[in-house]
Image (tube, rainbow, N blue to C red; front, side, top):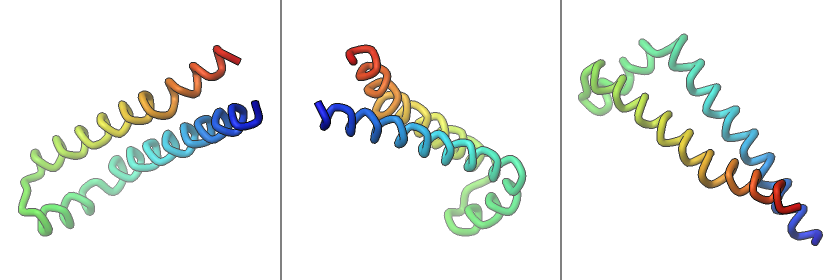
Length: 81
């Protein structure tokens, strides 16, 4: 039962850390988005519209991955326990 509790704790903290990283990335994009777009535009040759789409898709996919691989298993383990 100790392994169950450890895994549940790891999933819980992993969820918290990943959501924190997602929020941090959103805040950075809100306040420093123009500078970041400038760098990425030069690196990859993408337009501002394409970069906006890429950033949105990255954040949406990251959020889905957090829910599927961290939050859902954590909640399932909380329900079972």
